[in-house]
Image (cartoon, rainbow, N blue to C red; front, side, top):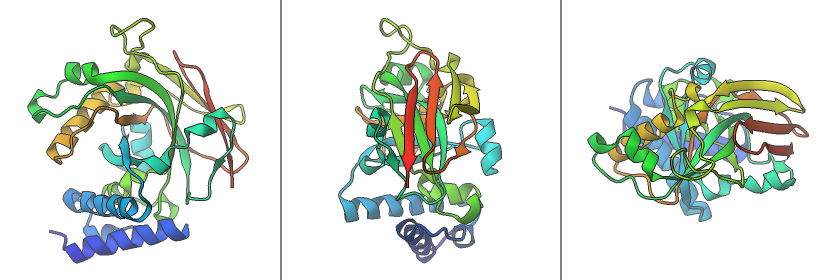
Length: 273
């Protein structure tokens, strides 16, 4: 079992890297490679310290490493989750204002389907079915997640990315949401969408809804089970980033990124230092 001192040291290492924008060594030397409770304890320590220091609040969750393409990129074999905080939301960038990269360390970008929840998912985990989570979704939205790693050269194992709040950075959500199919006019079926991500009009990533654990709603079900196990259920109003539909790609200041996810209007942002 990882000691509380080791957890605290991992929190400090990652927090310092975030504050200085200087990548740090991986934290698996402190918490091991398979101690998931320790990794999530580090994540909680980072998130709670940020909330206490800045006054931000939790607006939802993100699911990471849901596609085989991203798992190969990260060298992991299972999904994880992290917290979305209010200061990570840079959706105004979809209105034409360039997004600042001043808080980022080693960013990459990926396209995915997001969900807004209409109701809590607060039931025992054996009751969390695909039908239940589907019924809890108020709307689906197109999203760009700017993932980031505080760990040098993205040299991460599974406990490293979990500890680093699932390699979170920023996110952009489209303005026009759609209901799920069968839940309203013009409904969308997340597993059937196709995605193309371009940088400066050159396609750099592509994929489908089925690449996300077979169905982004299955990713949501998985997350709801994990949240129940951790005693922190998903709540009405939460935004859920369900996971990448294709590989993530690097970008630099001045780049223009567009995510085209079928059924939704294209989502375009640009970046500046």
